[in-house]
Image (tube, rainbow, N blue to C red; front, side, top):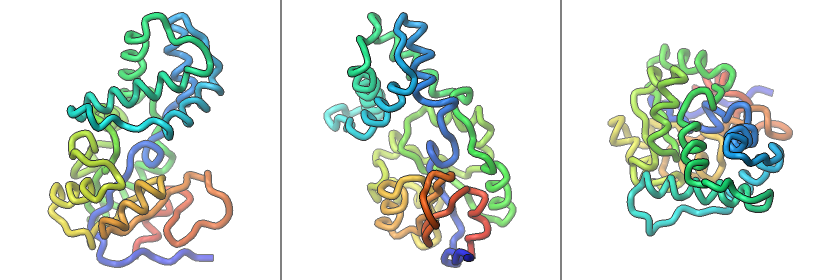
Length: 236
């Protein structure tokens, strides 16, 4: 069954980063365990992965921490603390452990670009579409994009810690419009979260699309694609 094309008139496509363009490599649990071993702690990789997923959704960012980058760091420290809390004691020198863990995720060696991403971005750019990243992330994303060689594809990189808003808040979508000099009707956002990416885009008056990377069940709907290389054929 063929999928319908997206609305004509789209001239800008923005992409979420983690879960859309890149994924942790080899896995969050494996990376956490590797760093923990250097700090004299051995946690089971599978339990670290499960602990991270639970903590990531359970921990909220502290609005009383006013500096955006400090707020991001505080958030991730509490995620890490909660992820390992039910597994075993934290490393004796937790600040050094966390510093290393936080820094390691700023490098391409810890991220895998999803299959077909480079080819898809090249096709879209050849069609004359303007491309950008729109992500709930911090300054580390700049290094990740440079080291993975994704940065040259994008006209702009809009990061929540710099924009002052996080998806699904319309404020970050407005920031993207200002950065690119476009109106909402011309914009499509592609991500992996229904709440942050699809619903956030729609609330801002944008078009939205979810990429499942093979993790969905059953047929994709009108606002989903299974892999990113399907995107060019979905554009009207």
